[in-house]
Image 1 (cartoon, protein in one colour):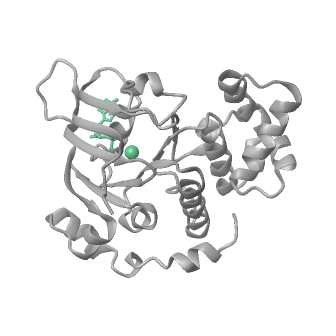
Image 2: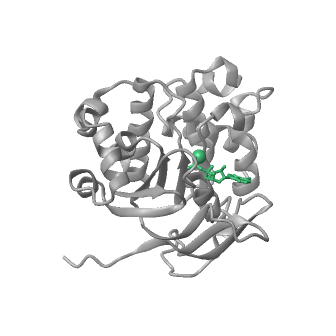
Image 3: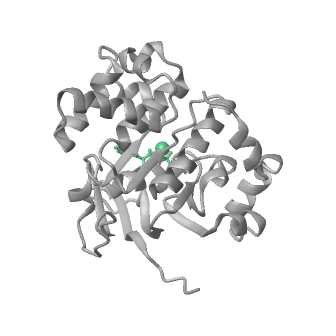
Length: 277
Ligand SMILES: Nc1ncnc2c1ncn2[C@@H]1O[C@H](COP(=O)(O)OP(=O)(O)O)[C@@H](O)[C@H]1O
Ligand SMILES: [Mg+2]
């Protein structure tokens, strides 16, 4: 019927440049909209500004870089179109996962410790309620033996399991938006497919919105409803994933599509039948 737009997040002219310079911007006037409950894929070569753009959303731009532009965030949980700065939403409605889960996991602490921290802080959980919630979060990310994993140290887990734990940690605040920065790049192809499956299923079961960043268009096309192509700090093309792949407009997008022709017809059925990492 009517396809009323319902953006969760709107970016307007987001620009990141070295403070005090007029050097070419690293992120150059990016405007994008993220539909509630959908997955926006952001693809582009290394150094094109994908991570900086993602970090702009949560205000994590390190000095000496400077962020300008506007972000409009509409809260999902209560359905109110109440503007709230993404900075205020950070850590509560927006979570982020990265390429290297080991970097975010404390090597000296058991998995249960890592998961307990946000649950104490954001949900005020203690004791048995806290332990139960940790186990159910691990189950939510497809871990079949959550008690063993909770007792484990990060180095005892495979890369795929580590990334599942990071996704569990990211979900612990019950966010509306999950930002994923190359979350499968460090994983082997089979494990990568299972993590993509997990993200897709979380999107549908929890109504989670995703921004999924990768240098790999084939990977992005597995999860993204909409794809935005980034080149040299700018979005050069944006559209429904299938349309962008079938009929790329920009020369850079054409090159991306040409470079991975065989893998660009993802078989979702096959992927869903794969077993967990
Ligand atoms: N802290 C920083 N200081 C200066 N330049 C940076 C900083 N972080 C990233 N850059 C530069 O900004 C550009 C975009 O980086 P990034 O967003 O990490 O790219 P991508 O994630 O697409 O690989 C690169 O040229 C990078 O060298
Ligand atoms: Mg990056």
